Image (cartoon, rainbow, N blue to C red; front, side):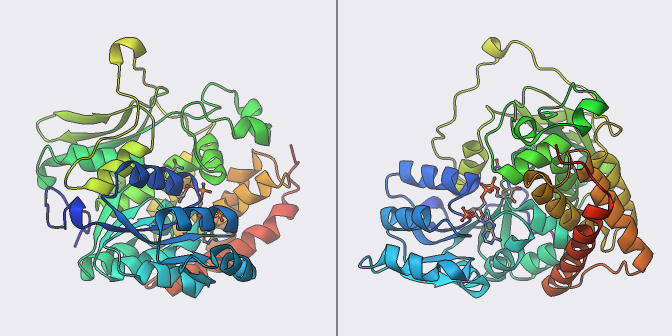
Length: 407
Ligand code: NDP
C-alpha cells in the first residue's frame, strides 16, 4: 500500500515528462523551474500555480509557454488575466482552479505550495495516478494516511522532495524494505543550534530568518529555527515510508552534507550526501528513475574537512518533544500540531508573538483540543481540513490569552 516506490522503475522516462508546478513562484517552485530551464526542452510544462504573486506567475507562464496558470487568491484573477492577455494561456483563480491545475494532463506534478492549503491540489494530482513530487510536507502531516491511501489506490507514485526524505528514499535502494531497521533524519540545528534557551525564546524575526545553510521560504525557515521542521519531517517519514515512530531518529549535523541515513539489519548504515541545494533532490525526482545533470556545487569533502554530529535537544527545542507526543496520541493530533504551528509562525512573523511563544502556542492548542475530547483521525481530506480549521481557530483564540511578548 506504500505509494513510495522502492526499487521499482514503473513510470515513464524523462523524455515523456509533462510537468505541472503547484507553488511555482516559491523557493521550491523556482528551483524546479530552474531545472526545467536548464533541460533544453526535455520537459514540457502544462500548468503553474501561485497564491497571489501574479507578476512572477505570468512571467514564468509566458516564458515556459504553459497552457494554464492559476492563483489561489480570487481577487487576483483580473490581474492575472490582464498579465496573460494575448498569450493564449488560460487563467484561473480560487481553490477550484488550483485543483484544476493539478488535474491538467501532466504526468509529473510538483506539489510545492506551502501549508495545508496544498492538500486538495496534491490529492487531485495523486488521484490521477501520476508521479507526485511531494515537497509540501504539511499535507502528509495534516492527512498522511488519507493522502498515502489515496495515492496508492490510484496508482500514483509519490517521490519525496524534502532533502532528508529524498536521501532516505535513495539510501533505501541499497537493501530490502524488510531488512530496514531505522532511518536517521539529519538536521542542521538552524540558527539557534548553540544558543541558550533564553536566547532562543527571545529571538527576533530577523535572527530566526537567518538559516545557516539553506535558502528557503519564510515559513519553513522559521520551522527550521524552532525545529518544528524536523518534527513535521518525522511525521512525514512515518507516513511516506510506513515506519514506526521508534524507527525514526534525528541527528544534528550542522554542515548539512549528509541528508539522511538508513540502517539495515546487518548494521550497515547507508547515507546520501550532497551540497545543501534543493535542486539536487528536485532533479532526482524530476528525472527519476533516470538521472539528469544537476547544477548544484560538486561535493568537495576534502575542502569541507569535517562532518560533525550532535544529539538533538528537546528541552531547547520543544518541537521535538511535542512531535513524539503527537505520534503517540495519533488520531487528529498531528493535524492539530501542524495547524497550530502554521498559526504560530504567521503570528511570529507578524510580530504578534515572540519566538518562544511558537511551541507554547502549539502545545496549548494541542491541550485545548484534547480537552474537547475528539481525537478521531481524519478519514478524508475534508475531515483533515475541518480539524485544521478548528485547530487554527483555537490557536488564534489562545495566542492573545497567552500574552506572548512580541520580539
Ligand atoms: P515558499 O513560501 O517559498 O512558496 C510557497 C508557494 O506556494 C508559492 O508559490 C506561493 O505563492 C504558494 N502559496 C502559498 N500559500 C498558498 C495558498 N494558501 N494557496 C495556494 N498557493 C499558496 O515556500 P517553499 O517553496 O519554501 O516551500 C514549499 C513547500 O515545500 C512547503 O511545504 C515546505 O515545507 C516544503 N519544502 C521546502 C523546502 C525548501 O527548501 N524551500 C525544502 C523541503 C520542503 P505566492 O508566491 O503567490 O505567495
